[in-house]
Amino acid sequence: MTLTAENAAARATPESTAGTATVRPPLDPQALRADFPIFERLIHGKRLAYLDSASTSLKPRRVLDAMDGYNRRYTANVHRGIYTTGEEATAAYEESRVKIARFINAPDPHEIVQVRNATEAINLVAYSWGRRNIGRADTIVLTELEHHANLVPWQLLVQEKDADLEFVPIHDDGRLNLQTYEVLLRTRPKLVAFTHVSNGLGTINPVREMVEMAHAAGALVLVDGAQAVPHLPVDVRAIDADFYVFSGHKVLGPTGSGALWARRELLDAMPPFLAGGEMIREVHLRRTTFNDVPWKFEAGTPDIAAAIGLGAALDYLADLGMDRLREHERELVGYALEVLPREVPGITIYGPASADDRGGVVTFNLPGVHPHDVATLLDRDAIAVRAGHHCTQPLHERLGEAATARASFNVYSDRDDIDRLAKGLRSVQRVFDRPTSESHAATTQASANDLD
Ligand code: PMP
Image 1: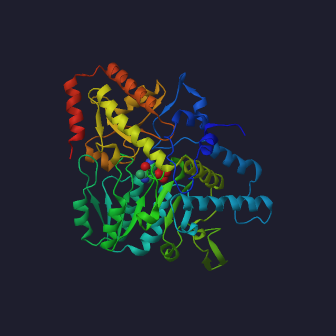
Image 2: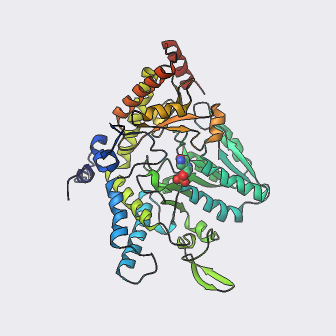
Image 3: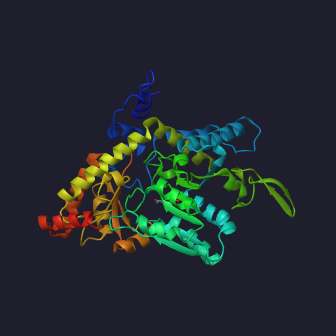
């Protein structure tokens, strides 16, 4: 085995000695980049500054090797073949379920449904739990921060059932207005669904408190963890929600992987969502009985390689330590919030003013320049940022912007990426010949901090 930063990092994991926990050093993003083959490639002759991890993360070699191992050495369907490779495939697929459960501290791997992404997990709950439990005039409470994946499935449900949606508004700095949340809970909603971390603004919501408030009002809670599981230590037992979902492709894992965690009694009571092979116990021409959970919700052949890759990604992150990843991103966001307004006069930054309240996301605009132009020009310098509404159109309506640009981070991101972003944005401004006076800078920074 060659010593890559990946296995070096894993080896560097200090043991607690005689009950004394050792403080681990901060993550070393430059060394970790050696684990990600994409960095072997140059884009327009330059190292890729990948600042779009909130959209999808890069994949370390360990994930690629795990998927390759399945495809090359033990390809077989799962839960079917009573032969060596079939049993190996089933064991690896089920082992990923155990790794997912461990990673989010779920009490029981049987409470983990393996799905293709967070969108599928939310649709599963909306179709299965929602169609059985939501009726006429019932209320579902969402927030203005939601990704379309945690909005449109509920719109379809309430249209069908003649039920209602209510929305927790945000303060101007992107934090939820919890006073209004409290008022909305007095309507006794059946379900509250909100994101743990906003993909649009980075806001880290006070999930524990919000779940407690919802439960006190008699509602069940779904938490969209698509932007939390990749960036923070997540403990579903401590959060105490009823449903928690995330996508594998943002957690350094492959596309086509993800998970729904739900309380066992809820899953047991929920009717199937997709039907077909694998989710059944006995099938007769006119009648079927269903498999136990979680397989009742895993109809058809799953994306086996992706599930195995997700398990490898979670191992990789667990070895690095999610607390270290959180600290790394908090530091980077703090640096970006300091450097960008200073180096890029006129920039508008959206979202909470403090890095303590944000995941690894910095959303911004250059006045007078469309974010698509920003992203296109940055690409010439091999800087990848996202431009658009980030699947949060209602949030953008609230911000009064059709689109924004967004830089987002992960283990391989560093201060150099942010310095390059700042320099790239100055070049964009030169191309568009925008005014760059100090007073303009001061005004927009003030407005970014003073939005509440
Ligand atoms: N929720 C949030 C907060 C997200 O950021 C995303 C992806 N951008 C999703 C849900 C949907 O994820 P996917 O497209 O992987 O289903």
